[in-house]
Image (tube, rainbow, N blue to C red; front, side, top):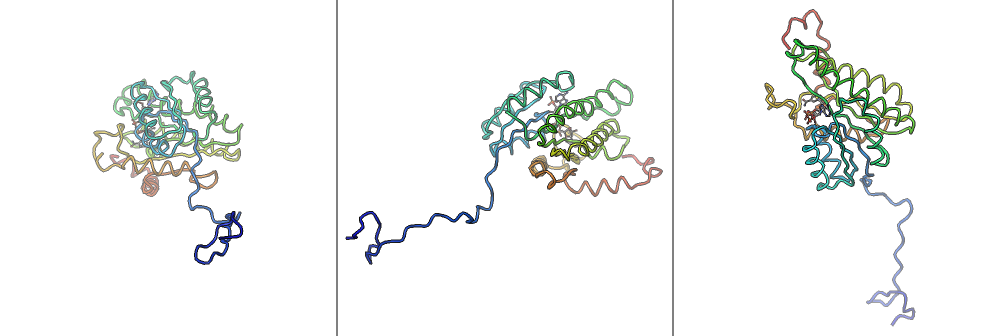
Length: 285
Ligand SMILES: NC(=O)c1ccc[n+]([C@@H]2O[C@H](COP(=O)([O-])OP(=O)(O)OC[C@H]3O[C@@H](n4cnc5c(N)ncnc54)[C@H](OP(=O)(O)O)[C@@H]3O)[C@@H](O)[C@H]2O)c1
């Protein structure tokens, strides 16, 4: 029997066992730090690209505020994200073309999330290029949804984030904005304007601690491109979403400012931009 009944003994030698040491303060940490849940506002949440990003965010336990104009689709997306493990999901049905309603909508979203870490803008319409050539009304619709409405949302969000010296504004622009082409120059010009706006905004508020991420996807398989010629060769939305989520996760000063996705589009567009106008104008692109 041990003389110290409180201390465990080695059964073979009856020697007291040394107590286990507490881990040292500087003991190595696990390789992957636990994920810190984020508060993410998604504008245009029924978009194929946005919904796929939201699934990743939900599965890792982030909080989401989803805005879309189609109530039924939005309810289905929100229900799916809850079952996937989102920490918190709230929604608002809104036609984002209504810029006058933006301040109240954004304030409500941020109130519901109790703050904001990321705003992800995914709204957009491809429109009908031949129709936009015939009718300024349709061209204006494309420009309004793809340029004016995002500018209104970003103006409010940028001021909110700049005042708090934090947050990421991640916006889906497009490679189509890198050079005007006859097949979709109205859509392309709306994205060119958005890209230029985001560049200037970044130049203004990066130094305030706010990240502005311009995302330029090449063609991706979503509802927007369904039925388009060659669409079976377009990028897979899951791979595109995974790349976007990773880029959004990067800390200020560490991640890209402009993300081409898939990455090959950075090279393709550099080549396309380098073609002299005198040659380019004769091509059917
Ligand atoms: N797919 C591509 O190849 C590609 C390439 C480059 C850039 N992008 C850009 O990526 C973004 C997402 O596109 P996607 O591929 O995911 O296509 P999508 O599934 O058609 O998504 C577009 C989303 O925008 C929403 N939307 C349009 N106008 C709106 C408005 N006034 N108010 C609220 N929501 C509105 C649509 O809502 P409804 O569901 O109600 O129509 C839809 O959810 C767009 O900005 C697009 O221009 C896409």
